[in-house]
Length: 224
Image (cartoon, rainbow, N blue to C red; front, side, top):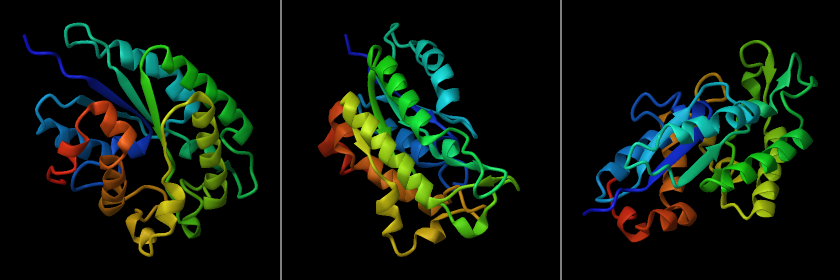
Protein backbone atom coordinates (compact mmCIF):
# COMPACT_ATOMS: atom_id res chain seq x y z
CA UNK A 1 0.00 0.00 0.00
CA UNK A 2 1.48 3.30 -1.08
CA UNK A 3 2.05 5.99 1.48
CA UNK A 4 -0.07 9.14 1.26
CA UNK A 5 1.92 12.22 0.24
CA UNK A 6 2.63 14.96 2.71
CA UNK A 7 0.57 18.14 2.60
CA UNK A 8 1.86 21.70 2.74
CA UNK A 9 -0.28 24.76 3.43
CA UNK A 10 1.04 28.14 2.32
CA UNK A 11 -0.93 30.75 4.23
CA UNK A 12 -0.67 34.48 3.74
CA UNK A 13 -1.75 37.56 1.86
CA UNK A 14 -1.93 38.66 -1.79
CA UNK A 15 1.62 37.45 -2.38
CA UNK A 16 0.54 33.89 -1.67
CA UNK A 17 -2.63 34.45 -3.68
CA UNK A 18 -0.41 35.35 -6.61
CA UNK A 19 -1.79 38.82 -7.29
CA UNK A 20 0.17 40.51 -10.07
CA UNK A 21 1.39 37.34 -11.76
CA UNK A 22 -0.75 37.05 -14.87
CA UNK A 23 1.55 34.43 -16.39
CA UNK A 24 1.90 31.66 -13.81
CA UNK A 25 -0.31 32.63 -10.88
CA UNK A 26 2.34 33.56 -8.33
CA UNK A 27 5.25 31.90 -6.58
CA UNK A 28 3.06 29.59 -4.49
CA UNK A 29 1.15 28.38 -7.56
CA UNK A 30 4.43 27.82 -9.38
CA UNK A 31 5.60 25.63 -6.52
CA UNK A 32 2.32 23.69 -6.58
CA UNK A 33 2.69 23.03 -10.30
CA UNK A 34 6.33 22.06 -9.96
CA UNK A 35 5.72 19.56 -7.18
CA UNK A 36 2.79 18.01 -9.01
CA UNK A 37 5.31 16.60 -11.51
CA UNK A 38 7.40 14.93 -8.80
CA UNK A 39 6.29 11.46 -7.64
CA UNK A 40 5.21 11.44 -3.99
CA UNK A 41 5.87 15.15 -3.61
CA UNK A 42 3.83 17.01 -1.00
CA UNK A 43 0.41 18.32 -2.01
CA UNK A 44 0.59 22.12 -1.93
CA UNK A 45 -2.34 24.33 -0.96
CA UNK A 46 -1.74 28.05 -1.66
CA UNK A 47 -4.12 29.84 0.73
CA UNK A 48 -3.61 33.55 0.22
CA UNK A 49 -6.20 36.25 0.90
CA UNK A 50 -5.63 39.81 -0.25
CA UNK A 51 -5.23 42.23 2.63
CA UNK A 52 -4.59 39.61 5.29
CA UNK A 53 -2.24 40.45 8.10
CA UNK A 54 -1.10 38.67 11.22
CA UNK A 55 -4.37 38.93 13.13
CA UNK A 56 -6.51 37.55 10.29
CA UNK A 57 -4.15 34.66 9.63
CA UNK A 58 -4.05 33.88 13.34
CA UNK A 59 -7.84 33.56 13.26
CA UNK A 60 -8.06 31.31 10.19
CA UNK A 61 -4.96 29.10 10.10
CA UNK A 62 -6.38 26.31 12.28
CA UNK A 63 -9.57 25.99 10.25
CA UNK A 64 -7.51 25.90 7.07
CA UNK A 65 -5.43 23.11 8.61
CA UNK A 66 -8.41 21.14 9.93
CA UNK A 67 -10.31 21.17 6.64
CA UNK A 68 -7.46 19.73 4.58
CA UNK A 69 -7.12 16.31 6.15
CA UNK A 70 -8.72 14.60 3.20
CA UNK A 71 -5.88 12.16 2.54
CA UNK A 72 -6.71 9.26 4.88
CA UNK A 73 -7.44 11.86 7.55
CA UNK A 74 -3.79 12.84 7.68
CA UNK A 75 -3.73 16.53 8.48
CA UNK A 76 -1.13 18.74 6.76
CA UNK A 77 2.33 18.16 8.16
CA UNK A 78 3.69 21.64 7.43
CA UNK A 79 2.67 25.27 7.04
CA UNK A 80 4.61 28.08 5.38
CA UNK A 81 3.62 31.56 6.54
CA UNK A 82 3.97 34.69 4.44
CA UNK A 83 2.52 37.63 6.35
CA UNK A 84 3.57 41.04 7.57
CA UNK A 85 3.45 43.44 4.65
CA UNK A 86 -0.09 44.60 5.37
CA UNK A 87 0.75 45.05 9.05
CA UNK A 88 3.50 47.56 8.19
CA UNK A 89 1.27 50.07 6.39
CA UNK A 90 0.87 53.52 7.93
CA UNK A 91 -2.74 54.68 7.90
CA UNK A 92 -3.80 58.11 6.68
CA UNK A 93 -0.35 59.66 6.27
CA UNK A 94 3.30 58.78 5.97
CA UNK A 95 3.59 59.39 9.71
CA UNK A 96 0.32 57.72 10.65
CA UNK A 97 -0.11 54.78 12.95
CA UNK A 98 0.72 51.36 11.51
CA UNK A 99 -1.91 48.70 11.00
CA UNK A 100 -0.08 46.79 13.73
CA UNK A 101 2.88 48.12 15.68
CA UNK A 102 6.21 46.34 15.32
CA UNK A 103 6.11 45.28 18.97
CA UNK A 104 2.55 43.95 18.71
CA UNK A 105 3.46 42.19 15.49
CA UNK A 106 6.42 40.41 17.05
CA UNK A 107 4.41 39.43 20.14
CA UNK A 108 1.50 38.12 18.07
CA UNK A 109 3.80 36.27 15.69
CA UNK A 110 5.55 34.50 18.55
CA UNK A 111 2.16 33.35 19.81
CA UNK A 112 1.09 32.19 16.35
CA UNK A 113 4.28 30.23 15.76
CA UNK A 114 3.87 28.53 19.12
CA UNK A 115 0.29 27.54 18.30
CA UNK A 116 1.16 26.10 14.91
CA UNK A 117 4.17 24.18 16.22
CA UNK A 118 1.80 22.12 18.37
CA UNK A 119 0.07 20.87 15.20
CA UNK A 120 2.53 20.97 12.32
CA UNK A 121 5.97 21.94 11.10
CA UNK A 122 6.02 25.69 10.53
CA UNK A 123 8.32 27.78 8.35
CA UNK A 124 8.20 31.43 7.37
CA UNK A 125 9.38 33.70 4.59
CA UNK A 126 10.17 37.39 4.69
CA UNK A 127 8.80 40.51 3.03
CA UNK A 128 9.38 42.07 -0.39
CA UNK A 129 10.21 45.70 -1.26
CA UNK A 130 7.83 48.47 -2.26
CA UNK A 131 8.21 51.47 -4.54
CA UNK A 132 7.81 54.34 -2.09
CA UNK A 133 7.31 56.83 -4.93
CA UNK A 134 3.94 55.22 -5.66
CA UNK A 135 2.50 55.77 -2.20
CA UNK A 136 -0.13 56.09 -0.91
CA UNK A 137 -1.68 52.79 -1.85
CA UNK A 138 -5.48 52.89 -2.18
CA UNK A 139 -5.20 56.62 -1.37
CA UNK A 140 -4.77 55.93 2.34
CA UNK A 141 -1.92 53.50 3.08
CA UNK A 142 1.78 54.33 3.14
CA UNK A 143 4.27 51.48 2.83
CA UNK A 144 8.03 51.97 3.13
CA UNK A 145 11.11 49.79 2.86
CA UNK A 146 12.56 51.22 6.06
CA UNK A 147 9.54 50.02 8.02
CA UNK A 148 9.48 46.70 6.17
CA UNK A 149 13.12 46.08 7.11
CA UNK A 150 12.17 46.61 10.76
CA UNK A 151 9.27 44.16 10.53
CA UNK A 152 11.31 41.55 8.71
CA UNK A 153 13.86 41.79 11.53
CA UNK A 154 10.98 41.10 13.94
CA UNK A 155 10.06 38.04 11.88
CA UNK A 156 13.62 36.78 11.98
CA UNK A 157 13.85 37.30 15.73
CA UNK A 158 10.53 35.56 16.42
CA UNK A 159 11.52 32.62 14.22
CA UNK A 160 14.91 32.36 15.89
CA UNK A 161 13.33 32.33 19.34
CA UNK A 162 10.83 29.67 18.25
CA UNK A 163 13.42 27.60 16.34
CA UNK A 164 11.41 28.05 13.13
CA UNK A 165 13.11 28.11 9.71
CA UNK A 166 13.07 31.57 8.17
CA UNK A 167 13.82 32.65 4.59
CA UNK A 168 14.68 36.38 4.39
CA UNK A 169 13.82 38.13 1.14
CA UNK A 170 13.73 41.89 1.54
CA UNK A 171 17.39 42.90 1.61
CA UNK A 172 18.33 40.33 -1.03
CA UNK A 173 15.73 41.68 -3.44
CA UNK A 174 16.76 45.27 -2.77
CA UNK A 175 20.29 44.34 -3.84
CA UNK A 176 18.99 43.30 -7.26
CA UNK A 177 19.56 46.12 -9.78
CA UNK A 178 16.21 45.50 -11.48
CA UNK A 179 14.01 45.02 -8.42
CA UNK A 180 11.79 48.04 -9.12
CA UNK A 181 10.85 46.52 -12.49
CA UNK A 182 9.54 43.46 -10.63
CA UNK A 183 6.67 45.42 -9.06
CA UNK A 184 3.20 46.18 -10.32
CA UNK A 185 2.34 49.86 -11.06
CA UNK A 186 0.75 50.09 -7.59
CA UNK A 187 4.24 49.87 -6.11
CA UNK A 188 3.43 47.00 -3.75
CA UNK A 189 2.50 43.80 -5.51
CA UNK A 190 5.01 41.71 -7.42
CA UNK A 191 4.54 41.18 -11.13
CA UNK A 192 5.36 37.90 -12.87
CA UNK A 193 9.10 38.57 -12.78
CA UNK A 194 8.96 39.40 -9.09
CA UNK A 195 7.00 36.26 -8.29
CA UNK A 196 9.53 34.26 -10.27
CA UNK A 197 12.37 35.70 -8.19
CA UNK A 198 10.64 34.63 -4.97
CA UNK A 199 9.83 31.25 -6.51
CA UNK A 200 13.49 30.62 -7.28
CA UNK A 201 14.34 31.39 -3.65
CA UNK A 202 11.61 29.04 -2.42
CA UNK A 203 12.68 26.33 -4.87
CA UNK A 204 16.15 26.34 -3.35
CA UNK A 205 15.18 26.80 0.31
CA UNK A 206 16.94 23.96 2.08
CA UNK A 207 14.61 23.93 5.10
CA UNK A 208 11.54 23.39 2.92
CA UNK A 209 13.18 20.96 0.53
CA UNK A 210 14.70 18.87 3.29
CA UNK A 211 11.27 18.61 4.92
CA UNK A 212 9.81 17.54 1.57
CA UNK A 213 12.56 14.97 1.21
CA UNK A 214 13.68 15.59 -2.35
CA UNK A 215 16.13 18.46 -2.49
CA UNK A 216 18.22 16.87 -5.23
CA UNK A 217 15.17 16.04 -7.32
CA UNK A 218 13.56 19.48 -7.12
CA UNK A 219 16.77 21.20 -8.19
CA UNK A 220 16.60 19.33 -11.49
CA UNK A 221 12.93 19.95 -12.31
CA UNK A 222 11.67 22.41 -14.88
CA UNK A 223 10.93 25.92 -13.63
CA UNK A 224 7.53 27.23 -14.69
